[in-house]
Image 1 (cartoon, rainbow, N blue to C red):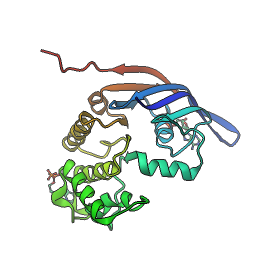
Image 2: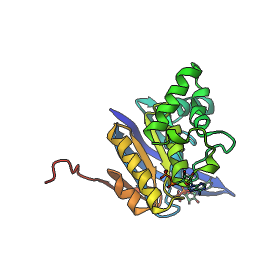
Image 3: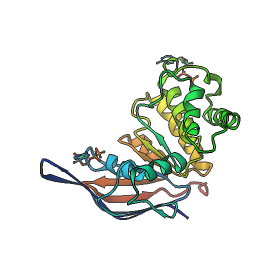
Image 4: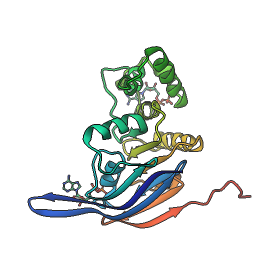
Length: 234
Ligand code: ADP
Ligand code: ADP
């Protein structure tokens, strides 16, 4: 079962009558349970690809099938609904809301769901915080936490709607190496539990921790490498 299928995706930007081909001829299939790192030099199209995958932007050409549904040509509201129900986002700068507690931040995505029920939502949020080992900080505010802790809370928030796909944009970019490793270990654990993850990264160590590396150059995929499972190694 494929979570992502991109068929011949292209994205062009036009500004001041100059056209930039940010992406061209992108074909990509990601199966459920894969852990993908998207790498490549600055300007190669990584953010554009992640925005399309996250339904924050639309391609100018091609098809995008997300969990079997064609989503390339949906309008803004429909894309927002799919984002809320099927996708989880993790950002470089955590993007927690500073005047909400940890628990309230994690709860927030659920409050937008049509069938929101506070008591169940609280239990889900507490469980998500336990999954990232942050339950002991649930009544803290983001400013009272280290960067690594804030990112773990942001990951809990991304998990709260049981997304089909987690999209991460430079998730270790603002972290020191110890906290970066904690976040990578957490992604690995989530992936082993069956979560599908797509991460954009400049950081070689982050890329290596994924099980598949896609490299972009000038808007096209120039390499696609899957690391052999080490489970049968001596
Ligand atoms: P990366 O994330 O790999 O640094 P981007 O996806 O941000 O690359 O950019 C790919 C190309 O598209 C670059 O040439 C960039 O200047 C261009 N681009 C990205 N967003 C826009 C935009 N909103 N308007 C015009 N050009 C853009
Ligand atoms: P842990 O190992 O418990 O996840 P850290 O070793 O990162 O956490 O931080 C230990 C404690 O120091 C945390 O509880 C946090 O509240 C505090 N702390 C660390 N870094 C910062 C920071 N940049 N700003 C505020 N508090 C911080």
